[in-house]
Amino acid sequence: MTNRITACEQAGYLDGLAAGLAQALTDVEIVAAPGGTAAVPADWASDGETIPHSLAAREGVAFVRVPAATETTATLTELGVLLGAARLGATRRLADHAVAHLSGRTSGGEPTIRKQLVLGTLADLLTEVEALRVQLMVSAASAETVADVHHRITDLDWEAAKLLGASGYLADSPGRSCHVSELVANCWVAG
Amino acid sequence: MTGLEPPLLALRETIGEIVPDLRKRALAIDTAPADMAAHLGSPAFRAICDATVPKRFRSGPTVFDQFETRSYLARIVATVELSRGDPGVLTASPGPSLAGVVVDALGSEEQREMFYRAVADGPLWTFFAMTEPDRGSDGTAVETTLTKSESGDYTLVGAKRYISNGARGAIGVVFARTGPSPLSLRAALIRQPAPGLTSRPLDMLGLRGAYLSELRFDGVRVPAGMVLGSHLPLSRRGTWGIARTFNIMRIHIGAMAIGLAYAAYDYVASCLPGAPGHHMQAARLDAARQLLYDAAAAADKDPDDAYRPSVAKLHCTALAIGVLRWAVVALGPGSLLAHPLLEKWRRDAYAFEFMDGTTNVQRLRIARTVETARSQR
Image 1: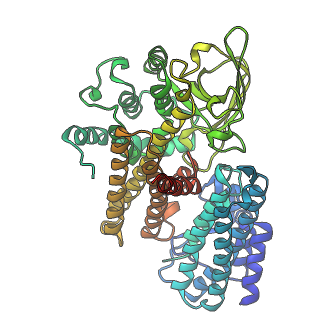
Image 2 (image 1 turned 45 degrees about the vertical axis):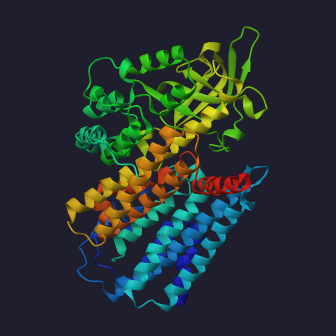
Image 3 (image 1 turned 30 degrees about the horizontal axis):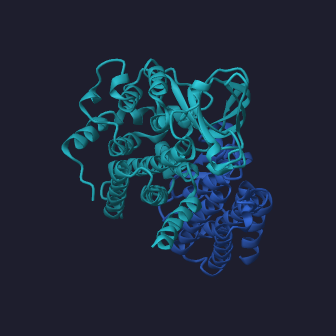
């Protein structure tokens, strides 16, 4: 499982949320989703069956109606772990964008990246990434714990997106993945 | 604590009556923020304009004539309720918006007359242009220049970004610098279209009704009579008015955030009465609204106080994010796609962070207020 977690995080980090999602769904037999909607890579879905969502489409993610899962099975919990890793990778990718953005700006005559409040946020963000990765690895059997990881990733993504300032709120900015990542988790993770 | 007197309670109730009209336009405006034709005659837009234009400039009798709507407290009461309808529709509305706050603070009687007559004859959008590309909303970092010519008129050169209704505004306030000193920051009324002025809307993740835009000024001629504050002492022409405007803007942003959070709370209550945690969310929202009322009442007495507005903005924007997060969890897996309004509001809630000073900016302002008070003891 550790290798699969690492692979999902790397895919999310190197190639983005949709790539991480594809990695997480590979070799997982899913027939139903907790909310009756499956989030999948856009190239896995045919045009006629998707629920239109322009921001998700631009992120390479599509939503497809599937039967609603009546209980959280071991397979869904396993997917939640792998998806958590993929989202963590996307979070790190977003944080990298934020660091590059802040390194190119100045505030009060010095690079914004050197401001103490910014450095503090960045340090907290990286620490939480490390803690969440370990939680995924040691708590993979508990649906409740996996849900906790996803809620915390959603909060973490927002902290990373804030570092981009208003430019991260443009529809074509890296900040978009923050919202789509929550949409994906909202489809697959109960609790 | 600031209790609402019966007239303000009645104002709140009156505005509450247009909440359904605001709500029903929310998704259409989010999808197509440039397509306003179907909304221009709406009860929502009419009420927003009527409530925000001073009584003497209104084009005819309105339901708001019986109320005092000019105090900061009345404006915040109204903003919370309008945003409870939908903050995207509120920001999409024609009317004086925040430009009116600047004109009130810095404009001469003649300039106020010109601005509000134009708005009252609308529908007409206005804009407030402070934020610059790569500079944020820091007034001390403004690089746009306003240069006086031999004729006495001015020339405007520079660019502004993330300006609400900037690409469709017919008149607005633009902040620019007449020189390098801190006292050289000035505000000018600019009409659009104008030679040398180009604008374009920006594609945003949320609060898309605000139609955030980029404006570029390439030698725009500004008649001397359009520069605000010339009738005021030098120290009160620019920075002073901006600081005062930003104080009230911050309470407004907090009010929009809390109105939105109330909307999400109401929505969950209607879909899932008694949802887990609803008592706590209601208590937090009611407390945050009281914080806003207290900040607005304090601003009516001392509009130069920066502490309460920053506290209100910092707390309310964070709380709105939290309430929306609760709403998504309360309605369960798949809720964001099953409830398009909830999905829109989740995106909208993030916008308030970036308006008129981020979380870190407010944190610094609050801490510096304490530090300054200590050093003056």
